[in-house]
Image (cartoon, rainbow, N blue to C red; front, side, top):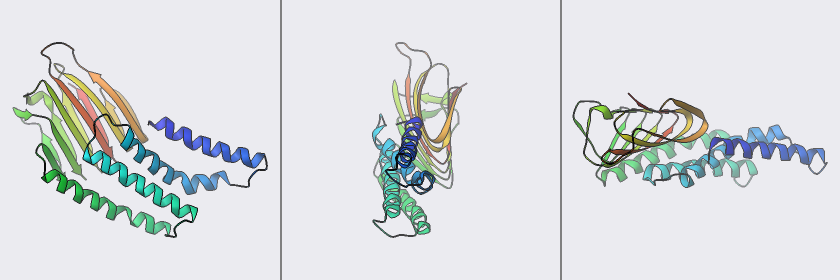
Amino acid sequence: MRLRYIIGLILILLGGTVLTNALGLATLSPWHLFIEYFWPIVFILVGLAFLVSTRVWSFSRVLMGLVLLAIGVLMMANHAGWIHIPTTKVWALFWPVVLIFIGLQLLFSARRDGRSWAILSGISRQHPGWKLRSNDYWTIMGGVNLDLRKAEILEDNTTLQVTTVLGGAEIVVPETIRVICDGTCVLGGIHLFGHDYGGVYTSHDEEHGPVGAGIPVVHIHCTSILGGVKVFAK
């Protein structure tokens, strides 16, 4: 579910409202609907996109999708009058939910090998000879910097899951390996091998490097909330 689908659904909603008004079937204000329901719709669609558009499931991605979906549904129910919570209260609930998300992620990470996480700091793998293995990198208000040119690649196929919240990721890869990369960003941007994408929600795939027997393949799955992702060859 890409950004154009979100924009398309919003335009259909606004257009349908204007049409019903013109036909005298309703007296709804399209701008009122836009203001009242734009953000709930964005949260719901982005949350669904996190749940259904991924090639590889990860705890971080599923949990973030559920959090965004729950916020959107709560805001929509509030606007529809099914529940009565002040708008400021709805946004005040956002940060406790984020804290719960962080806590669950830390608990889950502690039970598995192959995970690296950081809060209010970053993760850096740029020193010569560091060991590249399949791993999950996860940060809150921090960044991830990986230089695969200096890594010792131990496997023919390596999978990296990189998740950042209020931060970003920068990954440099050598020209001698095959990289299959997909990046998803909410309220941020993605740079994949010279191509830039951005917006409320964006998700793109890129492949780079030679193909052939004996050439290592690295799969990179990046997710960023309020941040950016940059993957490039050098």
